[in-house]
Amino acid sequence: MPELPEVETVARTIYPHIHNCVFTNSELLKLSSLHPLSMPLSTLTGMRICKVSRRGKLLVFTLEAADSYIKKIEVPQFLIIHLRMTGRVFSTKANEASGNHTRCKFGLKKPDGTPIQLFFDDTRTFGKILVATSKILDAWPFWHDLGPEPFEINTQEFAKRLKGTRALKSALLDQTVIAGIGNIYADESLFQARILPGRAANSLSGKESNALLSAIKDVLTRSIAQCGSSIRDYLDADGNAGAFQNTFMVYGRGGQPCKVCGNSLCKTRISGRATVFCPHCQK
DNA sequence: TCCTCCCTGTTC
DNA sequence: GAACAGGGAGGA
Image: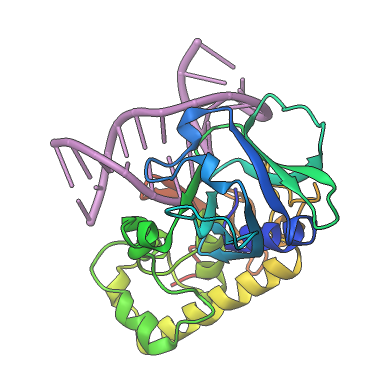
């Protein structure tokens, strides 16, 4: 399930394949995979991919008009893909056929003229494609309200954002509080910081909230270094699995012994999400 | 602030 | 054949 480290890995691995490629045609195979606010896919034609980046869990392709003589009334500046649970993005040769779960195919032309394709596959069809101007992005509440990047937030700002009496884990999953954290990295970060997931968000001492932010940054950094976590579906743009799942301390380990103290790990549900923690190590 | 729903493949 | 996986929208 792609969270920040996985999306970062996809952005890094897809970039060399499609940098400076120009859209020639696009085919939407599943209507619901297109975000309601999206411009038509046809507006991509003639646009060049000049950058691939990540914002939270969103994959962001930055576009520019390939030819100065293209005079469209409104040209899209971004192609945004949210992989959600099972989305995959990868490039293929020009004549590659769609798979069972291919939701969108983009025809591209490399700078040397070679045609290739960019596929968006998504088994559970939760993922979304959004072709947009910056004006459309501003009008998209999710984008507009997206919290700061974990690597860009400072300790004071982070502490300020942990308000309210809801469970700390709920706050970490809330993308308006901090961007990019999902179920895996919430549990792993809370364990590393030795803080219980059910604690009220506003109950942390200054020392604890600093420890939590440090843990988040450290966990995410280590995961990116291992190309993310592959649980069920996730593969990067080159079809490679990540390796961070091999170092999970708590996620998916309910009932198993804690790797630090040996006591049995507890499994519960917070915000409807499976949550695993060590009742002995975490306070 | 919490719950339900969306969706499909895998596991029990 | 039910339970489960879960990010985010939308409603209670």
